[in-house]
Image (cartoon, rainbow, N blue to C red; front, top):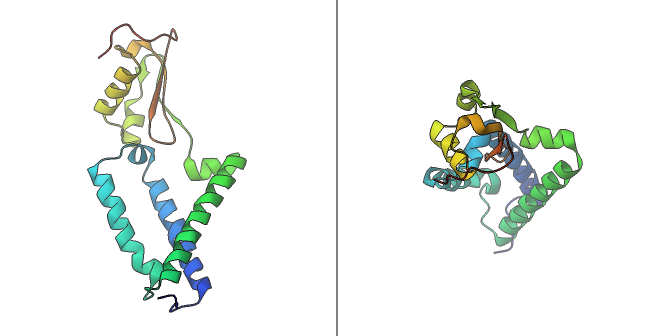
Length: 162
């Protein structure tokens, strides 16, 4: 139950490699992908976990190996958070930067397409901001977490709520 089938350092190396590769793949998938959590995203997470299980564990099924992997992944996640909180360059590299998707009443449709933001998602964000007309938008940003922030020209929300 506690006897591992490979050296302890191999578990850590496997965890680091899988973590870094998956982080890169998720980062490349785009901001909006991470901001929308649908049933398809839940399925993707489950399948990713299953897909990398053997890469992490190899043939080991010990409790010690599983706990060592879990601890390594948690520590890696903490390190990434620590580094990005202290380094603007690392934060930009790992999390990206907000993207302007509308300014002064003009929506940048090419940017919406590039960032995989649908018109419906943008309209929903306008409604959530209390904005009933694109002309009222001073600035709209696609944040690094995939959410859309809309700042209105006069700083107040519309009286109309949808």
